Image (cartoon, rainbow, N blue to C red; front, side, top):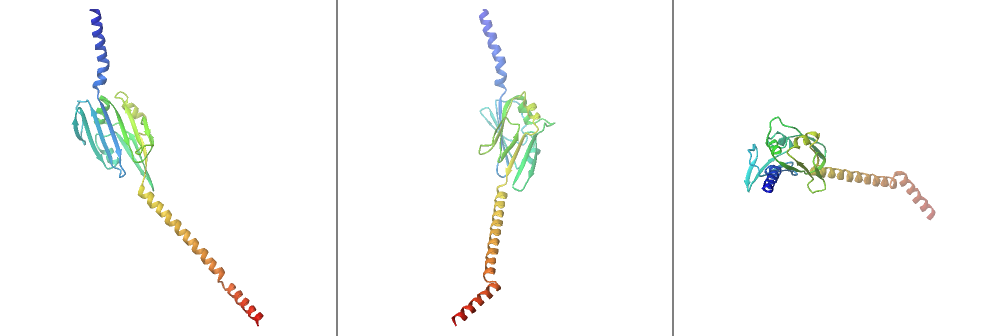
Length: 230
């Protein structure tokens, strides 16, 4: 009898320890940018039945998974949109490249992000069309075709971990068109300089060869030869 009671107690202890983790659910928040600067988002949420704020998202579901999708044209529009990652964006444009700096900013009005990190563990995966200069992510891969930053968040530590880092993500993006035009401009300038230099050398040779002093010397030489022949 005592053994049976002990076994029952152990089973309940195991359930109490591991059941909350199993019921907590998981999410995958994926963000990617394309060459035009558009920002695509897909969130996969598994085993969560709580009411979530889905304003601004297109949703679909099946087999216990909720899929959310949306697109923003740039980071400025993204920062102003509701229910996204709580970041502020600062973009600086230069001649052939631009830098985008995202900073984590805790919103005064909780939204989808706050709901998710308070109830589940999950990953944030951001792929960029550029080079990641700095990030608070747990993993950074600049060698990938699309450089990637990954945050692995737990519901107990998410906000504190993100708030401690001054920069959430900083990316440098090169403008292919501007680079091509710059290369073309330098090429035309180089060819023009070479051509002008070549023309100047040719003119100098012509001047040296057919200058008045040379012609006079040539005539004198011819006269001397004629006198000698006579």
